[in-house]
Length: 378
Image 1 (tube, rainbow, N blue to C red):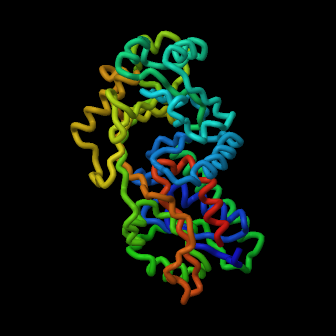
Image 2: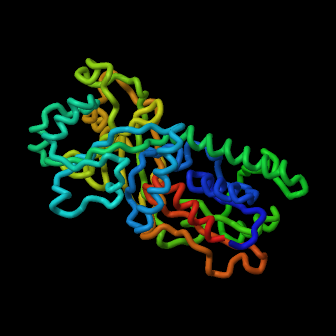
Image 3: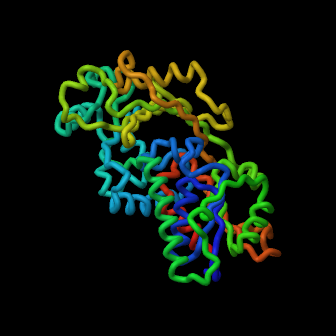
């Protein structure tokens, strides 16, 4: 590792904040600059489902990074909840050999089963599963499912916890070395927008930083002119966690909320998935996966579809209304970019530039492992 005393982290989503924490753990002071606050609702990490499950990302390193993240989420369960997850499937992944590699981790209690077996599991574990007629699921082609138990991060609270940890660790470094060019609490997080990497390097040099970590997500499309980057638009309606459910789901107060995903016809498709995620004090209903679509608001026809999804997945939409609408953009690339910049930028200034972005829909699934690897490149 190169001797670095201070680093500039650009971007304040889950990846950026975790990268800052990993640097501070190595006694490297940080400044975090981003166009918006880490807690701004426009932050893609703020509104996302927060479910640990590799998705919309085919990089082979994801399995390794996701396990490191799982280790931490299971060890420190503050601001996350271990939740039963059901993914309805039309094909037998056992015979098709399409069971994901990450499912082998025994801590997930991953099971592949037919929906008749799910009916029995539902009775035993008392899941708030909205489909009581399992024969009807089969009639629509959903013969199989995955059932596993996954951490779901309460994204806004977890982001706040990382902000607090960064401030605390920064103050500890400054206190232990008062002669260092430390940062006050106000200076650690700075609002700044960049249009190219040269501006970032200039900012780093002005701050006395030896390294830059580019954690800008979709912003790298402009910042780096990354032609491999595509924004993957996602849409969500938020409902109160205690909102009205379908009457048969309100009979037993001991029923456990379950995360449900359907991404195959006829109820959904790969570009218009149907899902419900219980996250903190809200229920998130989605969704979409539209590459290249940059519409910042939910269209009327999309809103109608999401309300239909909410009804299908157990929310009584005649008695419950959404409390929030959210649109975010996943940073989609063929592979996640975790590498030292080789263009020569920053060399003249003595600033090492490391890229750390492009995790698709798996940001909260890989944020620990991916950030650790990026910092190891110093």
